[in-house]
Image (cartoon, rainbow, N blue to C red; front, side, top):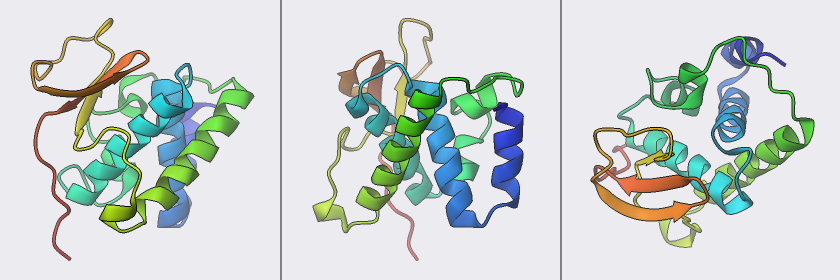
Length: 152
């Protein structure tokens, strides 16, 4: 499957289904070679950002915000070829959404408060000196800013 096709599909699906597809795609592109815990942490950052409203109102808005996550950084012609990793990313994304739907005190948080992450071996973002929440596999997770859920 080509990334461009997946993102087009997300644009025509109902919002909740589209968000699951966008989150699955992001987990796959960002962390398919990482542990389950590392993939869960990537999903958590995207969901925390969605709740803040600073990058958009939906997961798809968040993960397609300019230069924030892999769906806007890699080529639209990128093919998602690893079907086993894709299936795992879908499972992890759906589990993460269920977990994140729980009340705040009941959620299992992997990287509490993390608003960003980076693979420091290949990228040196300007905010890399922010508070480090955790390093899991190839990603370091940071609390660059306090993200609070927007008011309803």
